[in-house]
Length: 232
Image 1 (tube, one colour):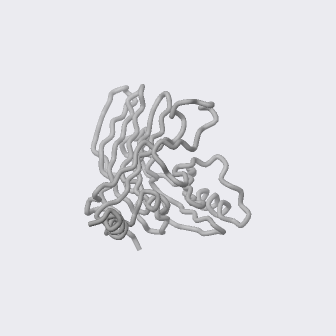
Image 2: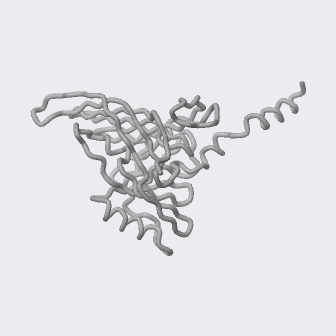
């Protein structure tokens, strides 16, 4: 077989490149979409004792809104709430905003204020999000930094910004309900002096793993995606 023929076959049977997968929506913002996670957490109690437990966490898109070139969602149980997890913790409300290939997040005090913020964010002529966290940037590539915080300064390292640490093809577990035999998973890491977060992302599916660890007071969480479903 010639080299040209081999190249053609590879294109036909493996058409999904890293750049193509990365261009998919980071999270499907569909009302009722639900992600279930299972893992463990460690925390420091009021008596300064360190405890640990197995935890199960649910993240769900409660409602969605659309505007010109933007789609927003009210989400309950945003995965970053697991930072500083405490037993009996109740999932809170947040807003996700997909603007182009970028995904932004901001927390809300309750569902009413979240819906108000969401409605304002999708109105025609609404400015780009200010004070929102840029969770996923467009055109992910290994080694890229984005979402730098001003307090981090002009640093030469990867601190105080999301850093794309890796991108690899993996075989999705059956619980993910993915038709493809392989998917591209990105590892995004956010490091600061006192703590760090790790977020694994499969574009078009969502967040498949989240980890948080504080470097001083014991506060840790580590969960894996076990199922994805659409709730009516």
